[in-house]
Image (cartoon, rainbow, N blue to C red; front, side):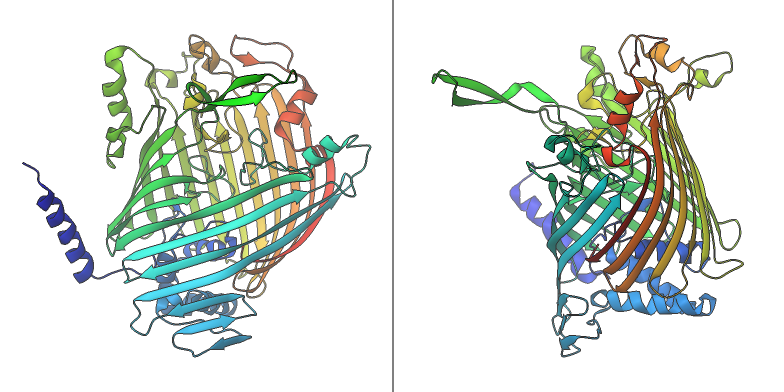
Length: 599
């Protein structure tokens, strides 16, 4: 019989292992929005200096330090600028190396604490190295201007990280963000105040752009929202388990991943990561998604007074429960070949399903076990893989594939149906023949009915944002960037983007076979091209100066005839308003400048 003392023995055994085994320090994920360090690590990896797992992001702070120290050992392979970047980031991750930072304007004893003003931050490490703390403010502003007016983006907040006894990490951050576009806007484009407010909102679940998704609050001046992330993680050298709210990106990609892009608002999740050896990594999470679908059986009753001064009862319907479980196996048999595969399931039940807490499971099989007996609709399962190759020095090739559903009979030329899959291929060429010069390219295609489901609550979405590539199904994306890093901390990039959305379909049960038998990539209903020049300079760690000049042309086309029941028809104006922010509709030349403390 399983007794309480058995639980005590298990906990005591885990504590024993954690205490006596070698450990990692600061198992805290570093947001992928801190683009400079991620770009630098990608550069070192492509140059063949270090070997990293590109398939699962964000990286932990300690993993980043390990790669930086690995690069330090091979400093003969680094350029003069890369060596300066390396020392810059080693100083930024000083706490992970059991020391304090060295800054220009600071008050410090150089052993246990540092109060910095040039890089606003307070950091502390106890004399026995068993407690580490970092606290920094967050402040930033970005001004975007064009022929349609001006939008001011501002954000402020704070970020805290702690590491206790080299086995427990705690972190949290809060950013209050707003887009204000009610001043300087031409009435020719925004005839009333409501259009002006909506014109300042650059991201929405239906918009086809790569901006991070948000959930707006009530505001009378534009888009106002907050972003709170954080978590707690227990760890040792071979792995970690945690509860966190972060943006997850799965799949090797530079512009946008087609497996998990991390574009949707962050969601709370239980996470597990195992790294028992250098050539294998396992990642798992179980997440609580936001369905944005009202449940008719879950509501609050609310009394209110109507216009006739009578008391009435309103039903406040709550969102339907929605969950997701996913795993990823990564194998790195040799330094220049990385292969990852995994599967996931999006499910909607009254409560969490224990079967989907099994980390190594194949979830489609479990789904059949749980639903087929009643003849009910399956949940929404997927599988995916990604492959990264470094065939020669300075070159990285990668591909990712997301499979919503597959039947091998559909691969026959005689079968008109196409499997609802998404694939992405890309390359990264850097450091040759000119040090600091790089060229990247990505091509993505998603077939009809990919990421969708006949039951809205089971779509591959959270907060109504697609969790895969932002273009969704029956779409194509081409991205190319030429970049140059002339000095430490500076990045200049010239990029071209061509996004195309084709016929739009509903995933209607009974008409699915007809929908996926239609010709994919046929009638264009939306297209956006953008040519952009970006400038970023990291003056101090997490202190940015940015500038951007971009020309874009977002246009849409009529589709007034349908070839099957599932096809959605509409006018050009309908598609344009659905897929593009007002600010970027049509031909635009825009410029932006900004600064920030922290990203």
